[in-house]
Structures are given as structure tokens and as C-alpha cells.
Amino acid sequence: MKVTSIEAGVPGPGERDHRAVPSALADSLQRPMEERLALAVSWNRAASELRVGLSRIERRTADR
Amino acid sequence: MNEVFDARELFRALHAHEVAYVTNGGVAVQAHGGQRMTQDLDVAVASARENFESLAGALSELDARILGPDGRRSDSTPGATLLASGDQWHLVTRHGRLDVMTVPVRLGSFEEMRGRAHEVPMDDFIVPVASRRDLLVLKRAAGRAQDLADIELLESLDQDEGAAGPA
Image (cartoon, rainbow over the protein chains, first blue to last red):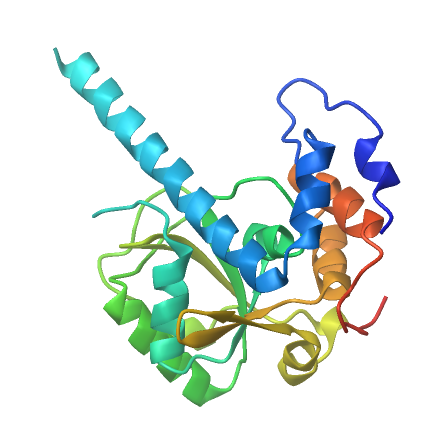
């Protein structure tokens, strides 16, 4: 498996970086696509829940 | 409207209404190994009339609204006729953002793109995920900052699990 370019380069400020943890990518590529998709769906949902929760708190704080 | 992004529920609705689609965008990149998060689901759909009927049924179940460029939402769920009149729709649903497009000419027909897609099991249904090559074509055409990062990742993967689409 060739992942050398994943390890190269550093993202600029504000750039999203899916290469930030090369070992995580290497681990991910060992999993079947079914598992990667299921994990992605769960992670995205968790991140979204956090985002929605944070936004509610910010709104509540702003209303006070 | 609860807008926690839950791609599983979006997939479930598309499957339940027998929509012919292929997943592309960030979720597909993640399925190919990308580690970034995304907050919307992008799908390419077959442009046959009956598929727009199926899509309209799924969108009705999802209580979807069209999201305009000014951030305003349509008053009602789009029907098949409206959906068939455009190439790309940005939608807000009860389970988060859903972006729908018809297949760009450069990728050939929907059937060809679907034929190259990976059939990924999820729960009791199958999620079609675009091939790495098709994702690369779409990402190169879009050319946004996140697309360039995705291109770098996708090009670095020398495994493509069966895809053999156009370069």
C-alpha cells in the first residue's frame, strides 16, 4: 500500500486536513469499505450533534 | 426541524423509495479512506422520469426543502417535475443537508457510473459509493479547496477495489 504522499506537506491555516494523522489513514485503509462507511456515518453524526448542541448553547447565551 | 446530519437515515429513505443513485462527495471520500468530516450527503441520481418520482417520494418522507443561494428555504417539498427541471439541487432535510445532482456528461451515463460504483452493505440495504476514479473526475471539475485536498488523498491511494472508469 502506497501512502507516502499522505505524509508529505503541512496544511495552511484554516485548511481541512484528512492527512493530519497518517497512521489513522493507514489503519483506516486496512478496514473494509463497509466498515469505513459505517464509521464515517457515525463520526459525521457525532460531529453534527456537537455542532447543533454548541449552536443551541450559543443562542441561549446570546438571548440572556 | 432537527438538522443533525445523519447520512444513514438519508440512505435509508433513498433505499426505501428505490431511488437510483450513487454516493459521491465527502462521504464517498471517507468510504475510500479520507479522514475528514462532512456535513452533507452528495448523490448523483439517474435522470429518468420515474427516478425523479422515487426521489420526490424520498424527499417527502425526509420533509426536504430546497435551499436557495440566499439561504432561504422553499415552502414545500419539491415534486418530480421540479426536480427533473434542474441538474443540481441543494436540499435541507430532517436529517441534514442533501445535495442531489444528475450525472455530468464527462462521466457518461448514470448506468455507467452506477456500474463502476462499489456496493457497500449498510444495515439491511446497499449503499452505492462512487469509484475512486469517478470521484477524482468530479473533484477535479469542482476545484474548491476541499476538493484539492481530496484529490491529493484519492490520487495517493493505489487501491481502487475494482473501479475502472474514465481517467
